[in-house]
Image 1 (cartoon, one colour):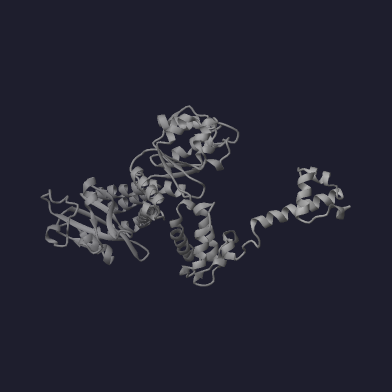
Image 2 (cartoon, helix red, strand yellow):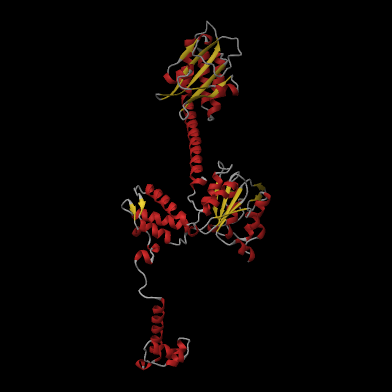
Length: 503
């Protein structure tokens, strides 16, 4: 009795330590000395994978611990966790339910006794505590069961905390896996909307470059989908499970962009109160997307060139050289060739970035994709706004096809989102679209007169206004209109204007 009380006291002290797992291992070690057990373990039920695993063990190898996995109801351990009732097996060799998944008894010629008690949190069984010791007919197994039940109650809180951590870890891992899969599907090449010849060329180029580590330069007007193409390249590359860091270079002040890209040390400049990692560090082993690359200044261009060539950089104010295992994808709507000519963009950096150029065509050059994109956005924003919109009307389609789309796909998306918000029926009509899309044909606002008539009316109006200002003086009127008195006299006669009427 004194030995058991001493063991319980020592275990209570061990469990009071702050470190979660080490305290459980220490408790098992103390239990081994007191009960002369050869092996013992604490198992936890994983609610995410519906599996029982060994979390802390004594007298077992790492390989045996890894093998010790059970389903609820499987073997003695699984039955104890499923039923919540303790079990004693006097001789394991005579128990058919004893599975010995860890395999540590196969090499022993010794007969063992096995005791397993549940570990509960409230009314829920979260795991179990089991021990085995060499069989001794004189050893009181019932008394040992009582001691183990007390110890199971003592470790319950620690095991419950471990079970919560394990559940959160598994849930986080599962959520990360799901999000990676969802991102991969969302930004797959097949999900880039377009069926025109120019977009097929883009798809082919993305397919060719995504499996490599080559630097990519995406060219095209604003709103053509350069960022979407960059995202598709990353999530279809071997780096898909690594970070994808986006940097809008045009949105960063010129005096801060170097710090944002490469980081800075504490005290490197006014306001640098602590060390800060840059975007290249955050994108380690992944991909960095430099949008509007043409807007960075020459000083930052030199550092960026070094990263591309040498794969290394230093933080602002630092002396330690850091390695950069990062794939670079850049994008711009500027004419970089002209920028190289006028000296605002380094020629050597241009060639380093332009390893694999991809040109995103403007929407006016891929007219056949307009209806596909419009239908895609109708479906997207109908779901977001909980509306059931089935189609676009024929006049609305005609308006979309005739417009020149200076804002490209982004402008089209905004137009469709506005139309979905305004639409209160199952069909988007022409009047749901912005007024900027209205043409003379659709709005029935053709000019009332021809070009010659409009020119003559303008000439007559300007001559009359000049004669009014000069009180019928044709010479001065000609000077105002930057013409000659002869031409003004001819036009006045043609339009039946009498200069005397203005004196």
